Image 1 (cartoon, rainbow, N blue to C red):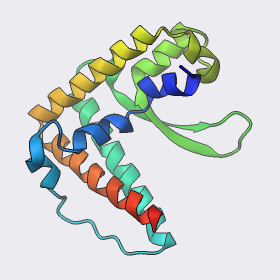
Image 2 (image 1 turned 90 degrees about the vertical axis):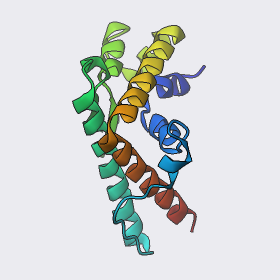
Image 3 (image 1 turned 90 degrees about the horizontal axis):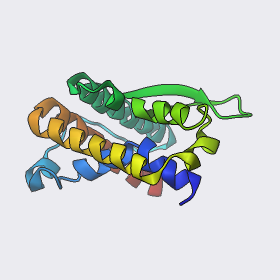
Image 4 (image 1 turned 135 degrees about the horizontal axis):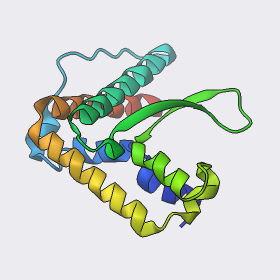
Length: 163
C-alpha cells in the first residue's frame, strides 16, 4: 500500500462523513432530511461560497463529535498547515491519534513516517473512530443533523463543480 493510501486510511475523516450521511446507518429517513435553509445560486463566486459553507459544516460535525466524545485521542481538530516548500496554507482536519502515531513511529514527518506504521494499527484506530462516530450519531440528534447538512452541501458542491 502506498504512503498516500495508508495515510488516507486514518487521516481522512471526510470519508466517514460521506459514508454515514448517505443514510446507511439510519435508513432512508435520515437521507431525506434537509437543513432548514441553504441557498445556492450558480457562478464561480458562488462555488467558492459553497466550498466555504461545506467546510464550515464539516467543522461543525467535528466540533460536535469532539464535544460528545470522551476519548481525546479520537477528538478531531483542524490545523492550518503549510506544505513543505510552499507559502500557501491549507486546513487539515484529523483525529488527535494521527499526530500521536506519527510521533510514535518516527518524528512526525507525515510522508516518511506513515510507511512505518503497521497496517493493523491504522485499521484498529480507523475502526474505533467509525464506531464512535456511529454511536454518537445514533445518540445525538444535533450530530445527525450536522452530518446531514454537511452531506447536502457536499453533494451540491460536487454537482456545481461538474457544471
